[in-house]
Image 1 (cartoon, helix red, strand yellow):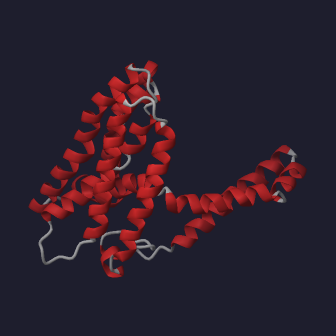
Image 2 (cartoon, rainbow, N blue to C red; image 1 turned 90 degrees about the vertical axis):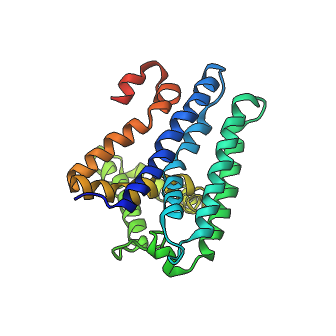
Length: 249
């Protein structure tokens, strides 16, 4: 099935942001890498580009009569711009601890985005894939329960197989593990925007369009290849500089 004219425009805008921006930022990333700087901020910021591309595409192609979560979209775009500026600044302002600065900046901007998201009407959030529950009625708490089941189930099964149930029992009785889970729950809400940035772009927006054009399986395969190539600048200058061709493959 072919894309309609609106979808073609949206895909073009999305691609210009999600794929061109990493290549342009890759120049600054390469310069920073060869200067011997910590370039981890570039990897974190790149996670925002897919969602930013979707939001810009929707803002530019939807009619004025259609209600969009504009406050959240604009807030997320501002967040992306500020993080891009921070990444560019890290190339030259080497005296700053950018790993720490990046964390504080992301936490503050995530809270800012979440506040804007809550200000949007519930039906508008749901219409654009921003509701708490999935678009097909999936309950978020069920995924949390699944995670906990897999997490503790893996621990118990490995203890049985390896004959180390005493150690496993000691771990389960330790308050540290529950403190870690509590921290994980809190950390999710204050650091979720970069992960949302990828999922909203790839899964919510791009995958359905690719599946419409190439079929259910073909769309996923095309997405997988494009997603892999999307990492090219990071493969060369961050993940695996010495064996980047192997990393790309």
